[in-house]
Length: 63
Image (cartoon, rainbow, N blue to C red):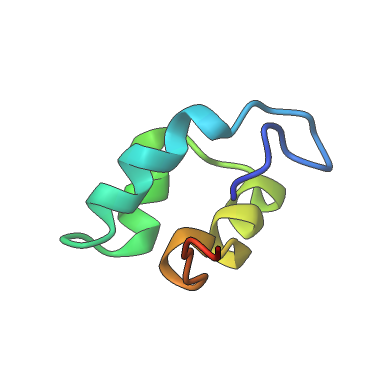
């Protein structure tokens, strides 16, 4: 789950998350972040350190 804003500078980040996930499948991460306009190291660190929890957590219906 990506934070709505950068913790350090306050830049909105959530709007870039889906595009980021799509593009990193084909391009280097540095190139993707540059293309998205994520220039500050604090914002880049959030993208690099965020794990997509939907792929890790097994959601199941427990009755």
